[in-house]
Image (cartoon, rainbow, N blue to C red; front, top):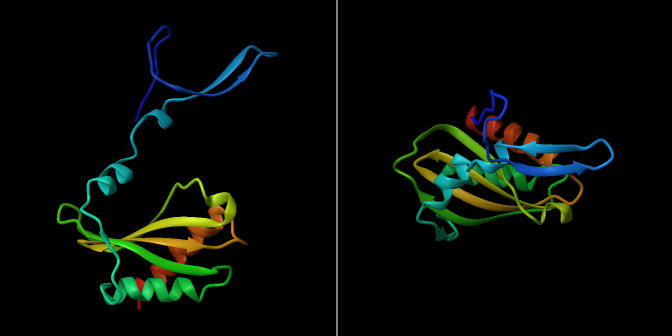
Length: 144
């Protein structure tokens, strides 16, 4: 993780805000680093989702999310195989999207060498509520 320990040390940072009254800058070094999850997802050979192509646990996740309170719809969009990343448990990640304000979210689920991207519509839920829902449903699916 990026660090700046010494006065005068040069660093690369993103300016988050500038306060001219107090002559202060809010900076983020973390936002300048590449997200390893996004990097690994970008390198996968994604294919369009075909009905019936999901494993039992992945389909169970989609079905459980679709019937969850606050979720309007769930639609798998892409699938991939990732032999370099073997997920021992069902992992679900919420991917940043510019459509979150309208209640449209993108999530990625991984289990074994399989990865699935899905579009989730949840107009009544905020980002944090969607993250909690994904984790709760994934843990329930995997422990059955």
